[in-house]
Length: 137
Image (cartoon, rainbow, N blue to C red; front, side):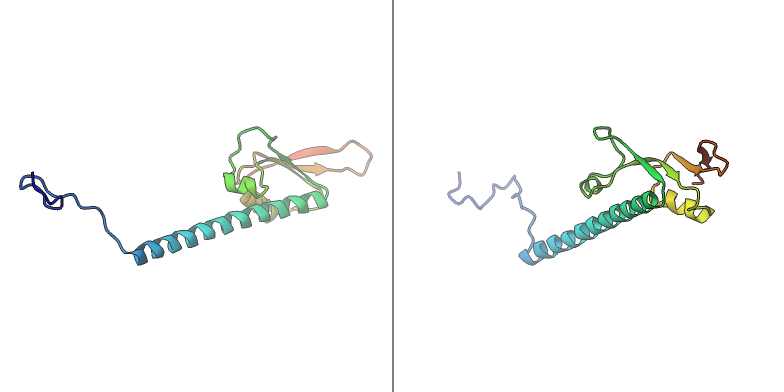
């Protein structure tokens, strides 16, 4: 048995570990942090855009139905932390969001929505009714 542990026996190759510089590690960590912060910022902007549209719909007399707490959602965890919830149905007020572009914008912001409705308020005193809106994806 040799006295020097750094010398390998003739039949066994010496094991080499992957080597890198500290500068390489620093550049890799900074690049990963920049990418992660950009992704977090994008998720925050999506959640805030959805929340502002929900508030606008409520202010105009509509309604948004979300998934109850405890039900598995299709929303990523980070957006859930930012307060975003899965929207299942949207009830639009009769005097707003009348064009196809408005409906397409709602579907673009809430791609998981299953049903869109428009509330009809007749002037003759009959009860309100809801008319389904076709979702074009």
